[in-house]
Image (spheres, rainbow, N blue to C red):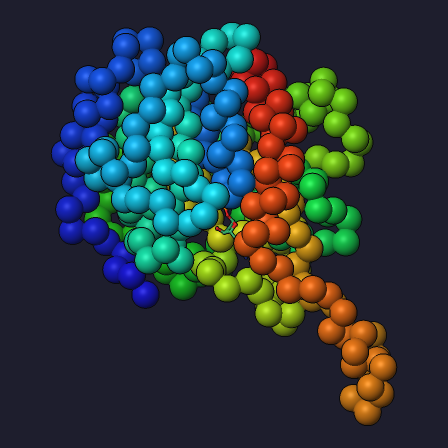
Length: 309
Ligand SMILES: O=P(O)(O)O[C@@H]1C[C@H](O)[C@@H](CO)O1
Ligand SMILES: Nc1nc2[nH]cnc2c(=O)[nH]1
């Protein structure tokens, strides 16, 4: 397991990164109010910013940032004005994942930079597998809560020395997902005439990845009360909550998690055992393709939510 505490994590490092960006932006763009993290296949969200307004930085050039290594995650920060209300916004086009070998401090480093730049609202997007019959591929989940499986084992981005400049040692997560923002998400979907039922409140299970679930793990996750499962989102959300940023989580259901089992399997019945195997394994290409095909809906949704803020 990668080390949990990066030795170079100090208030100073965050300040260096924030100053680096501030110095290269106009006053209007250097104080974003909203930050958006784009999940797998959802990098197209950056097109919601007018080309003329946009200023981009590759992750490699920003002090303290690591690089995106996953296909479908471009690896750049884009600043611009978004929507009719010209909201100053910063987008992370591509995120970092635990399974890339980064520790949770590295993954969540950008969140505290956003805080220093003045961000008040974080919209986290991502791809996830559905654990429930009623969650179809292509549906959008508005996160109402999460279950962090690594968190139960002490794998938490806030472990190690606390940075009091950002928040307290102990952080309550019972009201992590902002109610008003969730209402705005549903209002925006209504305004955009989304098919009723295609956007639902969801509980996100965070699993470390990079493996997708075994059938038994899928059944276990389902029994925990989770609706969808993914390999990201929660670390960033925990750090944002710690430093007092309001949070909205939007998840695109890219696949059904494989978990089917026969009701009464007879191990000697060849035909029944074949049925047991009839669900196709999930793959990342399928996850990205679904993200790209629903990018327009996600873009419109995010833009409309921001116009309601
Ligand atoms: O970054 P997100 O959470 O959108 O990406 C999901 C989780 C894995 O990175 C990948 C699995 O296909 O999609
Ligand atoms: N763990 C997990 N992450 C995903 N991301 C997209 N689909 C899935 C999935 O089925 N399982």
